[in-house]
Image 1: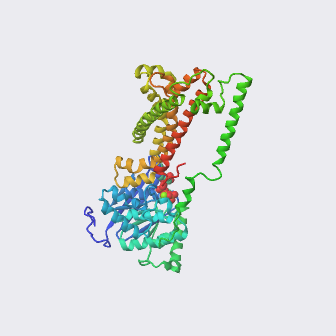
Image 2: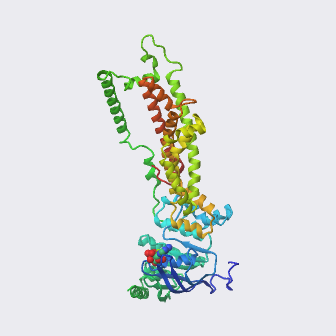
Image 3: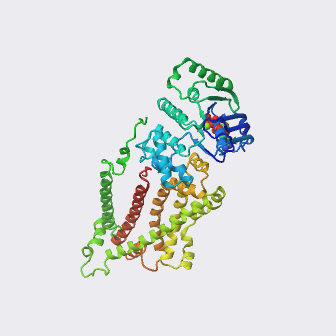
Length: 258
Length: 287
Ligand SMILES: Nc1ncnc2c1ncn2[C@@H]1O[C@H](COP(=O)(O)OP(=O)(O)OP(=O)(O)O)[C@@H](O)[C@H]1O
Ligand SMILES: [Mg+2]
């Protein structure tokens, strides 16, 4: 694992806080207040999902976590330099083949050619894109492009994975399939996740913890622990317990919105 | 797992070839235009009695390929033949156009890269690209002539001035076209300015660079011809040939030179379109 992290824990599943937001607020230079009083932690082994109305500051939250934006108030600590960031769009470079796209991040980190090619190949197989290495992004479906985007982040072996509504643009079936893939990767690779979505059932299905935010300026209105064990059985989606939790989260979302 | 359908790349294959229903339409128009031209020539010949103003299409072909047919009894064929003068002029103008174009590409891309570095750089330097575009070149002719002579160099300078703007503006637009998320992807990995430029901005700019290049290529021919007519010393190009033929009342020769100049413009335009398609057609629908 990392050598730079002051965290005492060294194994992936051991408790240890990877992301710690304390009383974070965000006001943009133009005066827009996007976040208020946000306390949030993501520990190793956790998959935390944030749901909230559009424009409440969810993307801003991730941007602060990734370092793209600096919180205007409070403390935002991230205890790893291996962060994966998956954007809403696949953001593949259209002139690069899938394998070259997946290699990109390692390339930007000056990893030797042979090594990054091997890493990319491994990641491509992990997300089920074997056989499409030579294709250009425009020759793939939206779901496959998103897989490539996931693979690209996986090459850096992130300890903390940030997802900004990655499956929002996909159809329901593709989305559910990618949810299962993501859960498998989560169990296998043991990264911690902070995931943003508009879909409450996706949130409950994927995560160990669901956080509900209010409308702008976004603040956390409720937290739910998701009790279902990992690895998760796809059929839990059809159990009454699952439906009940989805109902509770939806309710909190509606309360926070009004 | 990966069961989503692979979109067949065959979909875009059709666009390289001309669609079967379209090739003959321009041909019909072509013969229509020739016919119209013939009628106009007839009018100038029979009604106005000024046949040198608008020669018959056939005479234009003859002046190039069969000059003897146009000779009146007792006249001798010009030496060198009109065809060899025309080819010489074509060669000279092509050299001027391509030299000017090459210089415009280098200056244009560097200028745009400079401006893409920061908003203040763009604000400081873009107005000059616009001003360059607005200068009436004719006003500068005496100045350019005095400074750089009335031969090759000045013609190239005029060509550069005429074809620079589309290179600058299209390259700049292209460099700024990478979307925010793509740029942030590079930022997140701590990529340097240079890395971002070479691995993201520049490839992303290629489609609009080629659009600019194609436009600039067409303009470079205009620049070469115009420069030729401004600066008449040195080896003559098509511009001079048009001028001289016209002043000698050689209607067919004037027309032949004008048509050659136009064909040069079209050829250069098509050539750079083709180069663009070859370079980026694989990932970008370059039309
Ligand atoms: N750079 C910025 N300057 C000013 N305001 C901004 C900036 N970025 C975001 N905002 C504003 O902050 C608010 C929160 O934006 P953010 O993108 O975080 O919302 P979101 O919850 O991700 O929305 P969505 O669900 O639609 O993606 C919005 O009102 C947005 O207009
Ligand atoms: Mg967002």
